[in-house]
Length: 517
Ligand code: UN1
Image (tube, rainbow, N blue to C red):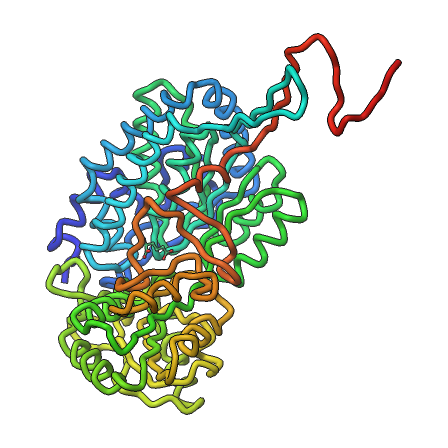
């Protein structure tokens, strides 16, 4: 069949975004520096080769870094609110291009079209947030202990921000970083996932046009293409002041250590093993959609995906049956067709990891409640469509302790007090997102207290995924400790400077030290 693509307007979307021609290894925008091996991008939707993109060689990378470091000098001179104006224009372009970009995200990555649009909406939202913030990069004034003195704190741009992003959020996570970094006065070099290179080139085209319209150097936003080797150029490079990396814990450990070795800064947003605690007073109307969307949304490939349900024994059967029942309604298929809830996994390696995880869970004693498996036949030719599975398991199973990027939901019982559920929820190495379903105020507050969830995100009567950009996003423990997007996450993109100013005619020393000459 000739391109599902044409059926859902993908061809048109690719043309509008200026990436249609990338099927022969050409590149566009600031990416025209690339001269390395060809990366092929296959859509998990229909298995088609949709682009060939050249990866960056060491020389290409150095040219990009030269462009970025020289653009930084121009960009940091611009007042922050004026930088905000550029981000505002970028956000407006995204509003215009929400449909084609959302479609490309869905087609290249495989998430549902609604989620593809949602991702672009997150980009628009973070631009709005950053525009406002561009007038609020406020420092403190601090009382000095000395007469005629004042202390203050200022925030300055840090320089080049390297962004390493994952395939699962191929556009939004980049924008969380760039929108903030740009208003802070930094320039960005982006290494997107080699599994979604077209999305990054499309984004680069959009910002490159905004920069051109404003006679600004394109080096303010750069991309480099390739696998971990290109990422390594960045992590080892002293010119990259901050490396913001999203991906697996395994990758994050390498990035964190390499960047720390040269005393660079890193922002790590790594794996999650997110649980929902379901208490006796939980409302099923909230529990079922929250848990099901959390577990199967994006085909279980969000770092915030719900992996575990910890259900009180008194409501266990009722909740289990409701969730198993809801799984029967899930439609799996082409994510561009809005009737489907769940699209494919990113590639066949992911399918194999998913299958192996189910086998491992069974071998450890798990009881399969909803069978998994790979879908075959018409519409499933890519081989990447799988059935969301539910397995009754124990928290201590090795496979349960591990993040599998696939729609496998482990359900388990707790008995007695909430403390027991919290202990299970916290009893994993990761610490990204968590939730409690309860109508009991004391339980909710206990869960949110210092003795409650140990995660960066803790929700009440909401699932674990779908965080808004206004809050700081990220997690503790093996999730890496970084915070992106809202709240005061902007501070990591700047360097703090403490100033002490003496406006008296004397030179009193701090701590009352006498030093008379
Ligand atoms: C991710 O999975 O890397 O909370 C990001 C969410 C989204 C972001 C997830 N806003 O699910």
